Amino acid sequence: MDKLLIKGGRRLEGEVRISGAKNSALPILAATLLSSERVTICNLPHLHDITTMIELLGCMGVQVLIDEKLNIEVNSETMTVFTAPYELVKTMRASILVLGPMLSKYGEATVSFPGGCAIGSRPVDLHLKGLEALGASITVEQGYIKAKSPGRLTGGHVFFDTVTVGGTENIMMAAVLAQGRTIIENAAREPEIVDLALFLNAMGAKVTGMGTDTLVIDGVESLHGCRYSVMPDRIETGTYLVAAAATGGRVVVKDTRPGMLDAVLAKLEEAGANISCGQDWIALDMPGRPKAVSIKTAPYPGFPTDMQAQFIALNTIAEGTGTVIETVFENRLIQVHEMNRMGAEIRVEGNTAIVTGTVQLKGAPVMATDLRASASLVILGLVAAGETLVERIYHIDRGYECIEEKLQLLGAHIKRIAA
Ligand code: EPZ
Image 1 (cartoon, rainbow, N blue to C red):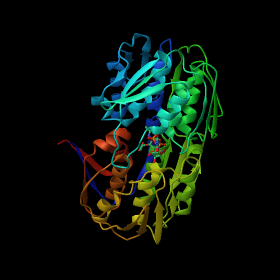
Image 2: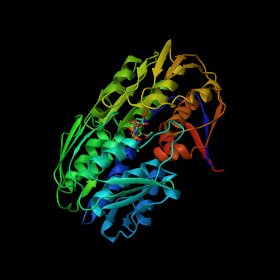
Image 3: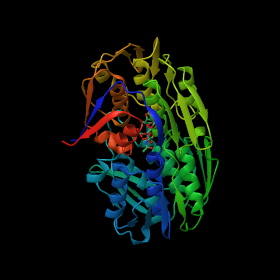
Image 4: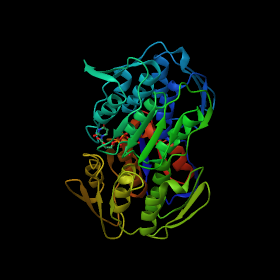
């Protein structure tokens, strides 16, 4: 398994370009199953999860043509298999997102039950309850979810007890071809939900209310083809901004959208960063040592859970003590133990990490446990004295396109060691 070797102590300076958003590209690729015509998707990030989703579509008989820029053309009319197999679903939980569109378009869908992962049990009960509210009959047999609907799904009223990004996406995709109106209450408001809704409407769907907690979808008979470009990745954006702040650097992040990151930018300014924004860029300058900040994760527009690990990393070398409360996932503080091996001073009490800033961390061999935790270990490696070897970086390759090249362009001493 590949590793990243980082020699700490360099300030990050320069420009970095942001890729398409993984967490928008995945539901959008699943939603291509809904179209009766060819669909072209642009600005896809070159990530392992994206190739896994493309492989999943292919194994169900969907025709996928990929050009050299990883723009892809999808024709799902060639679909012959209505099953998402365990072998693929076990490597990427987001495979569950093909359930809603497949059921809605073809009246049947069999998807391996996604397991939990390092950050939590991550059930899909709300997805299934929502599909049943649209008239689906669902059973779980030998580890597979089997969903059927006699004819078209029927529009219904779905209320999510917990805000769920994937659940909102699955029900929205199922509802666009249902008979009648669907109302989703306590819906997720993430920018990725808005991007998916805009993509569905570009194919002729009728989704309104995106970005609010109430979505209204009026079902249509069929969807036509379109060409759509995926939004920029707000978490990749935030990760590079935090990395620059941690090293006392000065960077400009380009091809992004500042409006998707208000909570993150506010916390970076509280930490002492000078930030300016344009339409598609954010400039950050961190003069000196950051100040510790306290955060509490919450569904959008609250502070994103996907930026929690990165801010713990920032706090480990900040002035003062910051508390980080994780409210979305039950086990998303596990990376602190690896951070403490580098000299960080982090105490965990339940879902709260109390981080006391230290002046100097020491490089060490560390192991990643999930996507964002692995990015936070890279940030620590950038600021620690000496060398840090981050292992199990397949987690990183799932969510960060060409991370070592992008960091090298910003002046970091980082290289990949193929194992
Ligand atoms: C999406 O995961 C993202 N993944 C996650 O990003 C992100 O952390 C998460 O949303 C929250 O913003 C993708 O978009 C591919 P949820 P998702 O359903 O949809 C509970 C990353 O690093 N829940 O909003 O799986 C669940 O256990 C990844 O890029 C139920 O109880 O998250 C969790 O506690 C990590 N029942 C909470 O809701 C359900 O049926 C939020 O989960 C569904 C969810």
